[in-house]
Image 1 (cartoon, rainbow, N blue to C red):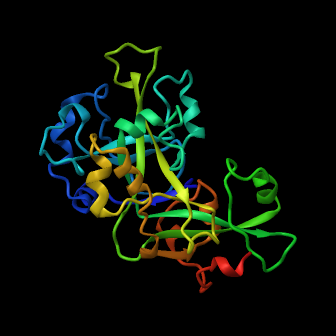
Image 2 (cartoon, rainbow, N blue to C red):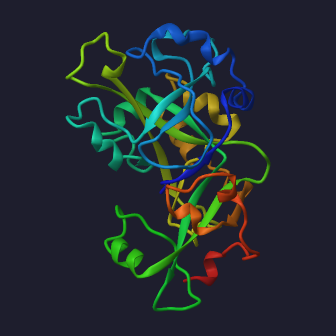
Amino acid sequence: MCGRYAQARNVHELQLAFDFAEPPEADGDRGTRAWPPLEEVAPDYNVAPGKRVYAVLGTPPGDAEPGAPTGPRSLRTLRWGLVPSWAKDPNVGYKMINARAETVAEKPSFRAAFARRRCLIPADAYYEWQLLPDGAPGAAEPGTSPATDPGHRRRKARARKRPYAIGYTEDAPLAFAGIFERWRDPTRPDDDPAAWLWTCAVITTEAAPRLSAIHERMPVVVPPDRWAVWLDPAAEPADLHDVLARTPADAFEVRPVGTDVNSVRNNGPHLLDRVDDTPEPEAATLF
């Protein structure tokens, strides 16, 4: 799963990294009802569910033209935790920060967004936690998800957590495969910008072998040569599922970090610092 990450780049840095075809402000007059807004977000080394985050969007579906660029077009601001358009309570988003690649095209909460509203969510690195069981000193187990492990809460309660930061070895941003939605607050008038809530979720998949000793899941990271496909509103389902299977995990650096990251109250670049010389874990030695 992906429940915490770091993102410290500003608007200009993200524009350069994602090679926007036009400045992010160029289509800012669409309005918050038609398209997500762009609001400045401060550097955050401990992004948690419910926070406002940057997302890179492609061509709006209604603006797509044959032969027109479909890749990164603009930067927008969304709340992390997807709220379906039909939801009665926006707080449901806190339970839907991730969508599983295996079911995102079929789940009622995600399928419409997967079909028409896809985005890239930039990150410097994401955090994941390995379990160190209290009853087995020296042993380590991969973290699990409540959705797949009935014993998740029990295992988590009986273990310490070793955090890792995972990102590209080069100074380049990760691009999580994301989906986004628009929710209408029925208590507010149409002309109130706050009437429209834009939210997102990160798509996750089975962890690559070199990461599976830390956690059973990982976020889908879209490599640069597939950004345009992912953001194309007319992309075929087969092409989208191909993107979901192409996370370049071999290009990632995996490093242990300090336990300050365990609390969302802690923030700052020190959260990404390596804490010791613990070697990268190998799945074969932990099972």
